[in-house]
Image (cartoon, rainbow, N blue to C red):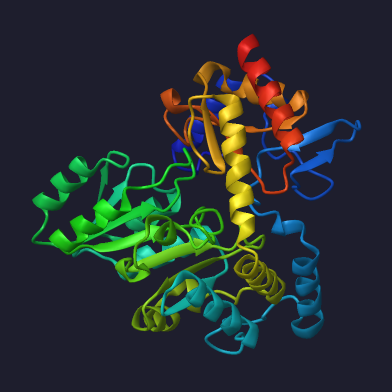
Length: 390
C-alpha cells in the first residue's frame, strides 16, 4: 500500500475493485504487436475493426509520412539532445512551425513535445492571479489543469450554454477574463457556437483560447479546423492550440497566434525552454502529413462522409459528420459493452467515471478515412447487437 500517496489513491483502488474482481479483465493497457491501425487481425486471426484510434486521416501509416520520418533520422538523429533555446533548434522545426502558421491562418506558431503539456504550460504561463479563466465544462483535462496551475480563479459554464457563459462574463466584466473552449469536443464530437462566443468577446473584451486538437484535419472544407468550419477570421482567436497526434499522425502540440505571443512563449514558457526539442522524426512526420493534407483536401470530405455514414447506421436520427461518435451506455454496463464488442471484432473503449460522471458514461468511436464502408457496416451491426443483448 502506497501510504505516502494522496488520498485519491485509495479512491482509485476502491473504484478498480468495483469494476472487476479479476484485474486481468480490465480493458486498459492491452498491448498490440503492430500499429494502432483502422483494421487488423488479432493473434487468433480474427478481423478487428478498430474504432479506438484518432488517426482520422490515416496518415499514421502513409508511406510518404513514414519515409519522411526515416530520412530525418538519417539527417538529424533521434533526439535534439538539448532545449531548442540553446543547441536543439533544427531547421525542420522552423519549417513545421511556418507551415502550421500558414495552414491555420495565424501569424506564427511554436511546437511542444506533448499536446497535454502544451495546454498546461501555456495556460499556466500566460494567465495568473489577476485573471478569471472560464472553461466549458467539457474542456480537456489539460486545459483545466493549466488553469488550476496558473493561480487564476477558474470557473466553468455548462457545455455550449451561452446564457450561462454570459452570466459569468457579466459578473466579472471589470476583470481580466479568458474563455477556454475546444473547437471539436473530444467527448461528444460536437462543436462550440463560436460565432456567438466571438460576439460575446467583442462585447466583454475577454481573451479567447481554443483547443482545436480534434478539429484540425477534420473540420472545414480543407481541414483547417473550427475557424474554417464556422467561417470566422482566425485572428479572432487569441490563442489557438492544436496537436500533431491526431490528423497529423505524429506526436506533440503547438500554439499558433500573433508574432508577439509566439516570441514571448519561445523565450519564457517553462514547458518549452526547459524541455528537449521535439524529435526530428516526429517533426518530419507532422510536416509531411500537413503537406499531404494541404495538397489533398478531398481527404477531409471522405472522412466526413464515412463519419456521417456510421452515425446514421447506428441511429437514423443522428445527423452528424463528426469523426467522434458517442454512444450513451449505463455505467453498470459500459465495460461489459466494450469488452463484448472487442470479443466480436470491434475495438472500442469505455469512457466513464472518473473521466466523466457516471450518468455520462459512454462508448466513444473514432472514424478513420481508411475505414471501408464494409468495416463500418460490420461495426454498426456488431455494436447494435451487443447493445440489444445487454
